[in-house]
Image (cartoon, rainbow, N blue to C red; front, side, top):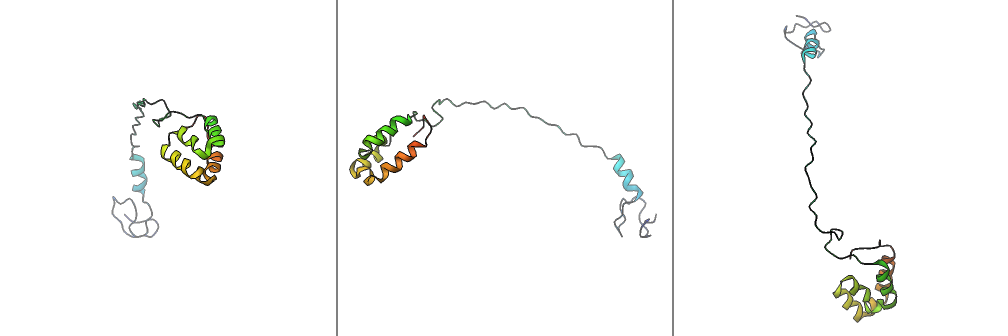
Length: 121
């Protein structure tokens, strides 16, 4: 058998000419006999949610934004909002440093304004 493009002699069972790479008549026969692969899709989802904690998944009780904001505004220098959030060491630090010289209270007030209600501290 000879290639139709380059005229080189090729094997009778060749699918592509080794000289020029042009498909032979055997190529089209091989394409016709090719079967499509059988694809099995198994989309069963057996996952179940086993979370028992109803407090946002954090293990902490929710805090009211407005209570923390009022404590920060009126007693922020004493760290009352930090004690309310359960952050005892920061509350003690705020108590002895005057709310980190007032700068910490201002930063906390601004961040409390943008927290959702309720939030998890």
